[in-house]
Amino acid sequence: MPTYHYDSLVNAMHDCRNNDETPSAVRLSLTQLATVEPVHVDQTPAPAPAHIRTARTMMDSHGRVIRDLRISITDRCNFRCVYCMEPDVQFAPRQSLLSPDEIVRIARIAEGLGVRKIRLTGGEPTLHPRLTEIIQGIRSATSVEIAMITNGSLLTRALLRQWKNAGLQRITISIDSMRADRFAQITRSTSSPDAVLAGLEMCLTEGLTPFKMNAVLIRGWNDDEAADLAALARRYDLQMRFIEYMPLDSGHTWDTTKWVSAAETRAQIEKRFPLIACEDDEVSSTARTFAFADGAPGRIGFIAPVSNPFCGACSRLRLTADGKVRPCLFSRREWNLLEIVRAGADDDAIANFLIDATWTKQPGHGILSPEFKQPQRPMSAIGG
Ligand code: SAM
Ligand code: SF4
Image 1 (cartoon, rainbow, N blue to C red):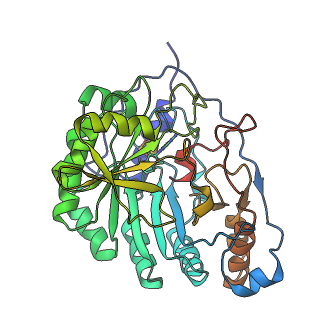
Image 2 (cartoon, rainbow, N blue to C red):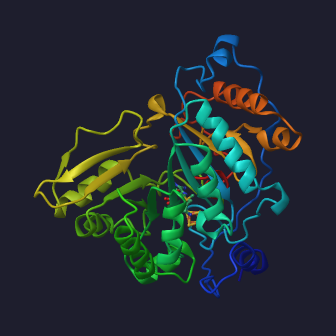
């Protein structure tokens, strides 16, 4: 029987949000413990070329411009999804996490450099005890679109109203199974599909739309549920997106036998619901979307970073909860923004740092190439 670090798990939940909705226990079904490796952090990027700095735009050396900033506001989570986070995951020390003021300041500076959309993520962002303040701060300081992605297990009508009034415009909810037993096994939590769907229904009635849901299919776990999950799009008139499983699990157990391609998922769905390609996807969008051929409401989206990388049109930059700038999900280098922020850097120096870090963005990830190496940070510590 393996040993689990229950203390870190339970503390994380209680630390983050001490209220009645904090789950009282987490059920674990671990088969493999993760090896935690140190993250390699470079302090400061070399200056980008002078004309790039002068343009005050975050453009990388391949000509891509950043419009979309993903900010992870916590690396803590009340789930331990098998494809993301091991039960004994090590969290960043609390004092190294960006404060709400620091997050808002960086968001404001990023908007000045061309960012148009900010997505709050984690870990589980709804665990953050000052989430409303963060949304409110970004709303007051910027006019960017504010979106959030959540596992949907801790939503209440009161919280949704608070966040919406503070300025939140969109929510994406993740759900990987419609079957209670599997949901518990995949998320290693005591939550359920019913709890997540209750959260989804509240989002819809509170007007947090247009609405998206995400699912990750893993062979042998839930790859037979594509059509059942697709049916949610029809039932609720939303976009159900299937993300190919990427090598970003903290257990480092991803291998090519486990991911399910978008093509295979689409074929599974089309056995029940024939699809028609939509022609209105934005170029930089991660998802290729499809409507139902029978005219039913809702859409299906496929996010295929493994089988069909969309790196060439990438407009995203990531800020981790501990203040590191990651130009790519798969970056094996990251830049320590926290340090300069806490050393008293002025806005101009922070802007230059973001411009310089963006310049280092790699052309692509090459997941299926023999040279590919999984980054040390798992998805939960990057922010998806
Ligand atoms: N906790 C929130 C949630 O689950 O929605 C937000 C953070 S989570 C890291 C963001 C998204 O990343 C989720 O939709 C999740 O399914 C996805 N994700 C996590 N690990 C992944 C992996 N290894 N491959 C593909 N998607 C992954
Ligand atoms: Fe938590 Fe989201 Fe990762 Fe699942 S995918 S462990 S809910 S951060």
